Image (cartoon, rainbow, N blue to C red; front, top):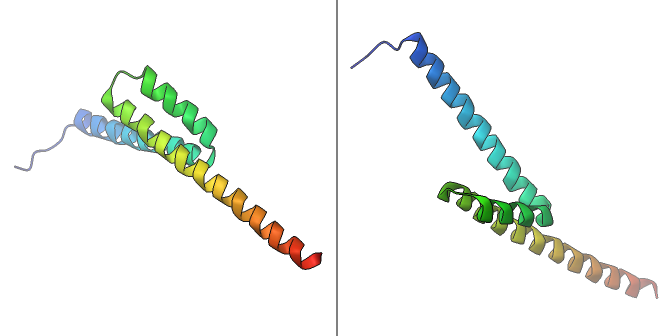
Length: 94
C-alpha cells in the first residue's frame, strides 16, 4: 500500500494545501470583517447570497449575515451600556 509519490504528485498536493490555506484565511477575514463592521458584513452577505452560483458560497453569505447581525447586536448593547453608565455617573455629580 505504500506507494512512492512522484514529484508531480508532491507538487500538486503542496499546491492544493496552499490553496486550502488561502481559502480559509479569506473566509476568516470575511467573518471577522462581518463581525467587527456589521454594515460591511451585511453588504458582503447580500453580494454573496444574490450573486453566487454555488451553495458553498451562499452558505458563506449566510454566515456573514448572521455574524453581521451578532456584531450589530453587540454594538447596540455597548451603546446602551454606555448610556446607562453615563446616566448613573451623572447622577452622582448632580
